[in-house]
Length: 194
Image 1 (cartoon, rainbow, N blue to C red):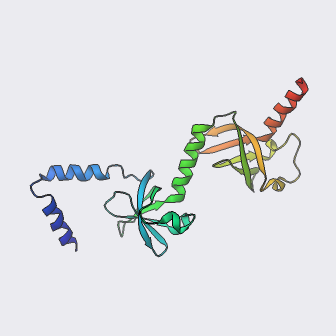
Image 2 (image 1 turned 180 degrees about the vertical axis):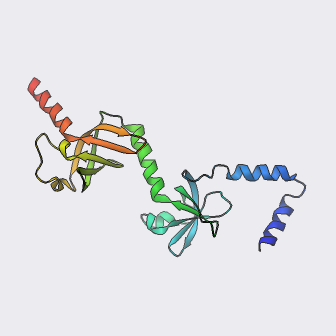
Image 3 (image 1 turned 90 degrees about the horizontal axis):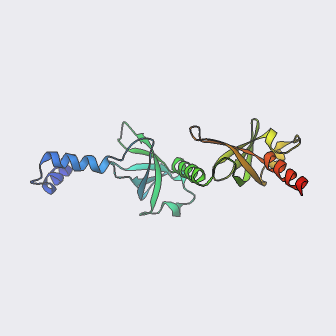
């Protein structure tokens, strides 16, 4: 019960001034902030939820669907999770592994690439105005930048692996714009000079 837990805590901290206990408690949970990525330890699986200890006063929960396989969610595994907030009724921490993976992928791409870099990725799907290309994170390839000539059906590129040039990185919106056309034009100019 809550009373038993409190009496065990009092016994463990017997003789320690309350202000020191408060300071220790604050330090142990100070890095818990909604909207951040933290490292957690998998405690187990309850139904469709993976129970994760993130060093907060209560455990957090991640949907089992956010894991590639149940092996990835094995007890004791350390994982990166995004803190979505807390459930007001239960006090449970709401976590997302998928959002953490996305943020980490974005950071990795930004660390390794700048505007003007060539990247290779697989065309995921057709969206309004062009294509979405997976280069570690989804990047936008406008229809006007797919080829030097107008492309008949942009959907024909879905599933293909393409090389393109980064022409814009918007860090605030986490948006990258690519141009395959620019790469092709540069290659054509090189050939002309030859």
